Length: 550
Image (cartoon, rainbow, N blue to C red; front, side, top):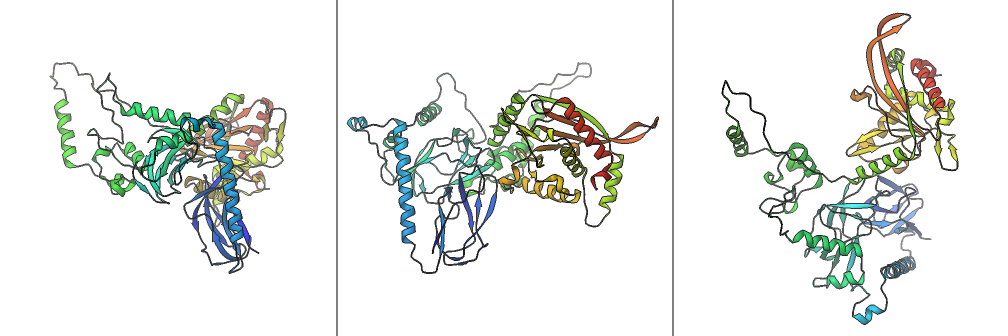
């Protein structure tokens, strides 16, 4: 009997997924445990296994297409089996859901039979599709159109890239699921809009767009249209031309990918001087990396500097520097916005206080040298800190808690999050059951998680469920710092650099190695004395690493 496979929910917050790649074709034999496809969520691309055996009879979502959770993904059954009833049943369900959604949207928009009397149609013409701002991340509340790859009037084929949309996690290419003409763009490049805002309309050429918009009235869309009108009408009070990295002084449009634009800004490269090698002359990453300033531009720059350099007399006082003040405003990425929101909530809802101690690391240094002298073994000081934290949490369970308003959650398990810096933000992969891991296991796991975090290959489950967090900036030479608590944790440990300095031992001044660590605590769950006792235990483990090997 045929088995219907729906789009899986690969995280507790996942609402839709995209089929990045099919590893099986219709007609292929499937064994239980075979990888059917690679499914892309907002955080990672994951392999999806089959739990059934048989023949792949139908693929419901093509490569590159996205669909909500529980949408028909595939059907597996016996070779030659009739699956028309399953397909028809699924279609009927989809039509029912779509009808309900249209009815709900119509009611919310306030469309009544009175519209018929005024000549306004309640129905969208056949073949016309309204495309909304997609939810590309479980935490995404709004998106920014980084670049449009199609313009109004262009023909669009199913699978064509319409635009690049910036979320809180990344800038992603957004494909069209429909074919037709791009009739309307509701969100301009560089503008942000909430999820489900009208992004574009695709349909037959000559369609009355105003009628479509009136059939689905949206105050936000009208505001966007008004904003666009204001942008296209020059102000009577100024004759100044606005110039940014997507518009030349001549008015010619510069097509550039977000990554190429970012690299150009970092390198100080004028996009007007770069020739694009992408589609339609679009500037891509390789164009910026291979760009060499022309000799003419270099000579002109030198001549300009020579002409503007002030002449000085031996007896004259030195000239003060002159120049023109300038600045650049760069739109915040969605990831940066979410980080700002979450950290602000933590800082202003949890009453933070900080405790700091200095740890003698002489024994830790010598112990690490001995451990790393063993074959196939590599342990860092950060691994030793993580292990010491796990053992200290077992002795001080009050620190391994979460504030839940009317209750305090005491976590019986120990999952330590390790902060990892990535482009444009910070992620916290989690070491589950850290107290049960050896130093070498911790070292291997941290290296693997951090590496995959930097290329955005972590699964959602690998970034959830921490009960305590460690943030280490010692490798950057930072001596001491304090961190904001990663809620719902009750504490976070900040680790500084190991410093060689004079210390007093047995009444004598000798050369020693010390490291400062600070503990940020939520005073609702962790009192000062509790935090201090935790740090005392942590210091004892770090100053006597042999106790962590028992």
